[in-house]
Amino acid sequence: MAVPSPKSPEQSERSRKYDRQLRLWGDQGQQDLETAHVCMINATALGTEILKSLVLPGVGAFTIIDNEVVTEEDVGSNFFVTAERVGEKRGSVTSQLLCELNPDTRGHFVDESILKLLDLNPELFKTFTVVITTSLHEKEIISLSHKLWEWNIPLIVCSSYGFFGSMRLQIDEHTIVKTHPDNQNPDLRLDCPFPKLKAHFDSYDLEALDLTDHLHVPYLVILYNHLDKWRRDIGDDTALPETYKQKQVIRQNIKNSIRKHDNGSLYHEENFEEAVKSVNFAYNRTTIPSEVQHILKDDKLLNLTSNSKPFWIMARALKEFVENEGNGRLPVRGTLPDMTADTFKYISLQQLYHEQAAKDAEEVYNRVQQILQDINQPDDTINENDIKIFCKHASEICVVRGTRIADEYERKGSADNEIAQSLEDPDSLIEHYIILRGIERFYSEYYNYPGEIDEQVESDIPKLKSCISKLLNEWGCMSSTKEDCIHEYCRYGKSELHSVSSFMGGCVSHEVIKLITKQYKPVNNSFVYNAINCSTESFNL
View 1 (cartoon, rainbow, N blue to C red):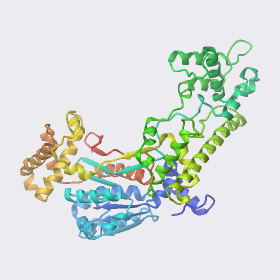
View 2 (view 1 turned 135 degrees about the horizontal axis):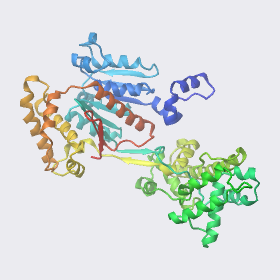
View 3 (view 1 turned 180 degrees about the vertical axis):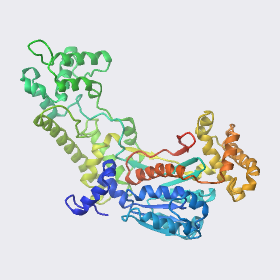
View 4 (view 1 turned 180 degrees about the horizontal axis):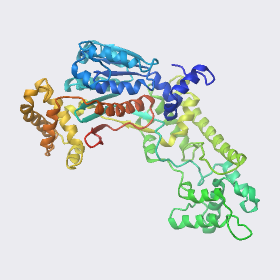
């Protein structure tokens, strides 16, 4: 779906409709969402809550695969079915009501079992961006896991069971450019200013400025000026203040340079106060983050082929830039934080960073074009805007490599360190993950869920305990789960609580959007929610 031009009425209407989310993932992220096709297997309360949270922000299309009919139990927990629709196809009913939430989204329904589809029409799954499952059985999960792993299509297995919910993400490789880190220092390059920036800093003589100019000098100029003085004082023109004592010396020097009134009181110079506050982060040495260093050494970067993805081609060009024009550093980010300064001085400084960022991006772009030619990929595989975005966010690029769910289910005779260590923590939610896995094993053996038949609640308790014990033995874990928890799960009888499904629906939809937009880091890789005390925990299994 093409994004309309900013001046068109369509763009204006789209911006108004999706304003809040556009601030989170931008135009490109919204476009990715609008071209995505999500598959939901089973329109349970959890399944429809997940889709609701994807339809509202404008996912392009969804397909529900469900061969069940609406039951009275569905009416009690699923907001997207009504009592008069009992007996009708659940996927059809829910897809109709979900589409009413947003006319921009297309909804489809497939009335077939998942195993039959995998057998007769497996190519259908290649059309989906992400596949999500709820209330799926162990055999079906394993079959689906193998197929989607082979095609590198993300799979999310979810459950809502009584007061607990869980989510497990399967993805082979997921590359992210815009990770949106919570805390990121600005790219100022005070330790190694590029030539034009250094000339700009050197053009200032702070002591010779009149009071008006002194009040409006950008704090970067102040910081560089005092760094230069400090280096001359210690006789080392490459040093940076690293210890608290060294930083205090510079802070005091900056404070001493604030102008005074005739009566000896200090002027209120906000720019100098900003400089004092910025000493901690502004004097950091410009380095390549360790995670990015690992990416620049990755085999996929070093051994490009005609099938290599754009991320790895750009990463290869980035590596060559770092080793040549970059002198061991990443491209300049090109953005500046806000600061007290007059408009001319701030824009002049900002323009220097913008120009250097554009120059660095052009160098990387030229290298990308050469690499594309070398590996026989079309010249237009990667455009200039892709390169600019990649260079701007080069310090935060990330690669997530996951594990296959089928391997986790089929694991025999080997202890899982994460599970074993978590079981030692009495407050860990890992026991609920184990019980939920035990319930899946229970269904595989008895073809119903523990406690689903009222008369069998008590007799199902020892059966479920046996299933859980078998799982722990297979994993080589000596610990056991709490007996009262097992009793509680049997009393749930596979019931879904809407409040739990709603919370889990929001969590899962967030992960789906991360995968679709390739922004923000997804959970790695399992997540459990306890609605009793409103706690959550994630595990890497």
